Length: 106
Image 1 (cartoon, rainbow, N blue to C red):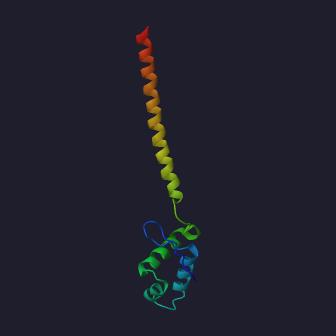
Image 2 (cartoon, rainbow, N blue to C red):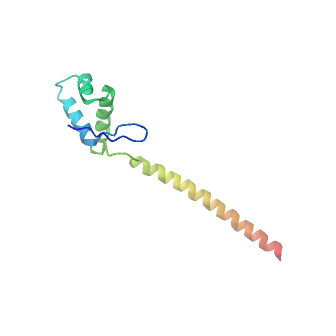
Image 3 (cartoon, helix red, strand yellow):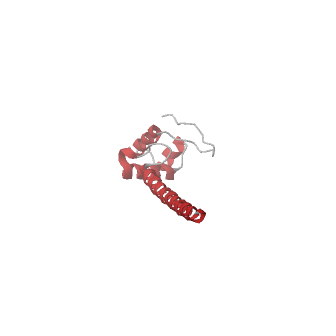
């Protein structure tokens, strides 16, 4: 099993989905204690637990990669609605101002 050694700007190692699944498969075999397996893989024991919990909760959706998850789409929708509301209010204010100054010229 090979580790993905790519590092981000923050110095964090990116670990592939395959590596995580293989680590969890080996953990499920109960051949070695989690602490020993984590040391062999070069990760912390609690990371194995986090991965196991993610796999239990999300199933096939676990470890999809960096970036926003499906929940990110929901937060983007909320952000876009707020932006639409703000822009609509700005437009309405400009319409009123335009009408006001048009009346003053006459």
